Image (cartoon, rainbow, N blue to C red; front, side, top):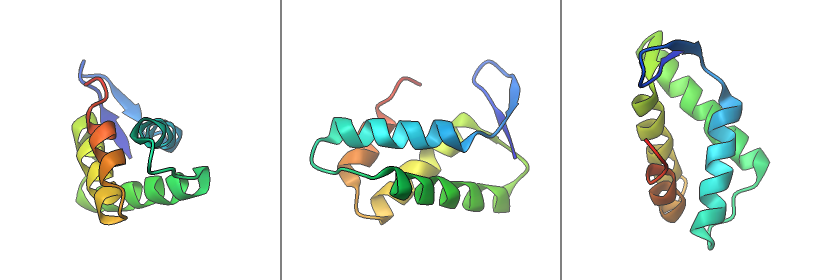
Length: 87
């Protein structure tokens, strides 16, 4: 899967970036600690959902999907922190 960055560059999807962002948001949320293993599971689900839709997606698609999954999994504060990261 490929990602279209805000500047128009197209790069290969890197789940490690999603994992690190989830973990950082979890720390910022304070009360919702997410393990690296759980972050990996969420990143895998993001990848699965987005690859069903199209071959090239935007960074906004990743952000929206990740936040939605975090909320579905019971991490609303982490989702809010994740959405608040620099866009």
